[in-house]
Every structure is written in structure tokens, then in C-alpha cells.
Image (cartoon, rainbow, N blue to C red):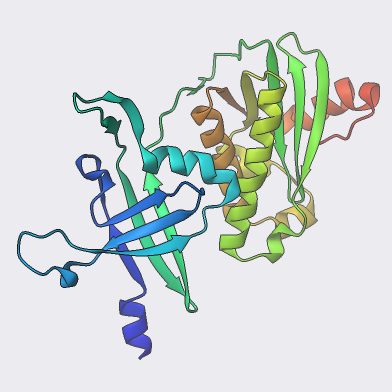
Length: 264
């Protein structure tokens, strides 16, 4: 029975732009904003030419990703045809159903359009407002400054007991925090972000507690999520060696503005 459960625990359907995004497993949203998963059932066809009937089940779309997901699965209206029906351009998306402990999870994968870009070593952000982001085991500190280096403000986004959650729950929390950071950056007209380069992450924090409790995978997940968010929303991204950033922040900003070293 265990072998059978493992063999039947997941179902995958690759995206197809010409088939409303996905032929066999399609996500739709009704007028009440309820998400639905429609699964083609070829065993229910009554004859060769008939389309497969669809099994339709309700799904919960996470609030923080609702607009992003619905924009993908519902398509974009380009106009109307001579009969007055809307012409919809669909984006392909792949769907995977996974069963875990008698619960079903739906993963959706699609290509993102990146309108931001990663700056090279010699380039500097040219935006009027730039955000420096410091990732730590229990918080993400975000500080704003002008391109001349004048401090404008800061905010801490707390990650309470992140290391005590399961991998899936941890990923959900990280996604929610990144969305909160995005909202705050947009509210403050930020055009570029600066964060530490992944290849220097081993030496980022020499604090024994941090190194022991902050799993490398989680750390990379957080940085990669921040970078994806930035590129998706038009921010320029600059990665730097964090070796001296804490020292510079402590000397230049921490005491003068009464903020923590992480924010500085």
C-alpha cells in the first residue's frame, strides 16, 4: 500500500499557451473570486470526438499571491472578435498536484517577465531612493537612503521562530514577508535595492547562534525571493560583499539616527 501511495502521490500537466494555458489541468476563478481546479477526465468521454469532461474542485489561492496567479491563469483581453466575443491571450502555466498526508496541494509554475535588472560590479543604482536589505535569522532589516547616501528611514520585518516551521510553511512565510517588503518599497518610491552577494554568505555572520540556527537553504531562499521580487517589479538589483557593511553602518548611521546595526 505504501508503494502504491508513493506511485500515485502526484499528477503533473505541462502548460500550453494554445490551450488556454493548460489543456489537462486548468485553474479558473469565478465571479465570487473563488478559485477552481478543473481536471480533464478522459475516462468520462462518451465517444472519440467528444471533449473530456472536467472534474471541478475548489482550491484556496493564497492571499498574497492572488492577483499574480489570477493574472496568469485568466489571461489578458486583447480586444473582441467580429462576433463581439473577447479575444484572450493566455500564458502557459504548468500544474502539479501533490498529495501529502491525505491533503492535496496544487503547485503552479509559469514564466515571469523581468522588467528590472541585476547591476554588474562597476554599476551603481541610479534611483533617487535606494533600499539596503540585511537578512538575518529572526528579521529582515530594510533601510532607505538617497543615491547620495543620505538616510531616509528604515523598517524591520520580523521572522518569528522561522526555523521551527516545516519547509513548506517556511517558504509560505518567506513569500508573505517578501510581499510586505515589496509593498513598503513601492510606497516609498524605491527604485533599486542592494543586498549581499550569495557567494559571500558563508562569512556574512560570525555570530555562533546565527550560524547554528539559520539554515543555508533558508538563507538562500530568502535572498533569491527578494531578487525575484525586485526583478519582477522593475527594481534594479545590486549585490555586494557584506564584509564591511555592518562596520560602515555602525560608524555612519547607527549612532546618528538611533537605529540598530542591522538597519544601518
